[in-house]
Image (cartoon, rainbow, N blue to C red; front, side, top):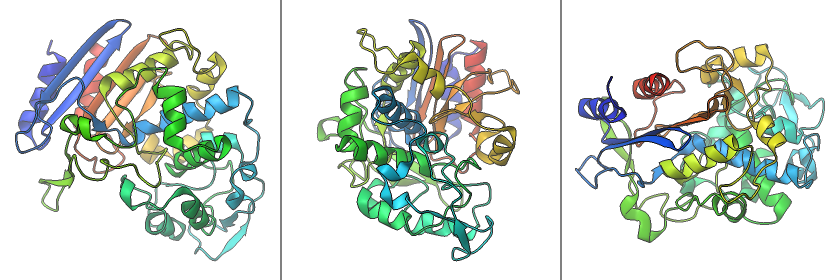
Length: 383
């Protein structure tokens, strides 16, 4: 049977991906491989501590931070968001998803914290990206591939959001991405602290996630990858250099996709969830009940079907997908986690205690995971 290194090397050799780091962990047993280099110019060899833009692998981390506030009683799942996000106190909703942005009706009820955690606020991406109400999400809120230095600060961002109608009534539909950015703003408003500061204190420090942040400090830039995407011909083009958009703190720390991290850091986060919310030193990060809520599907069958472009039949917990039925060898009921548009993926399987993490620096071309990601999942399932 081929090793994890063999798998990664075969994909790097075919190009255009310059390198990758991946691990499969079961308890204390970890299979890890680092292949290729951090850039196409033959740069630094990939290593276990190479730092990547993890994109939407940020989402479960942000959701966990929200749940620390629930555990402390500072917010409740049925609380209306308007208590902390007054910009959402009187949202309007387009009459139908295809209606123009000025054809609106009032929201039938307030948006709640539970709506936010399950990505059912009414804001976000559906299967059809051409709907009129989506245009302002790209133009004004800079939703889409992460670009941290181009997004307005939270208060200005929220002011812009208040002028954009919901695509669906609160609670009616699962929509991708924007709810996780709202979670980051909620955390900062409830705690009266910047999101990076709160995440560092409540998650990164207890879990020794020393390389996870919204920017890479100067002393670590030599471990940070370049980031690529396909040009018109399919050839890789540089989207961001190590000294680019993640080399300075952003005005808007994106709870949806702004973090950088390493394989071992995300493994520490996953192991905390597998340990029912407990850090390695015995400190409790989350209650066991909150871990269950995070890793349990909350969607209806109709909502899963409508979100199939992103979910592919999976459900959604808080901040990540939850596998419902086995459709592939790697698709295990209860598997929780998510993929990142920068070419990353992180999952954990509560039933077996396994963790799988794949980190690359090649942008995905759509919501469907690329061939290497699926091959990695199959390898992990067979290992």
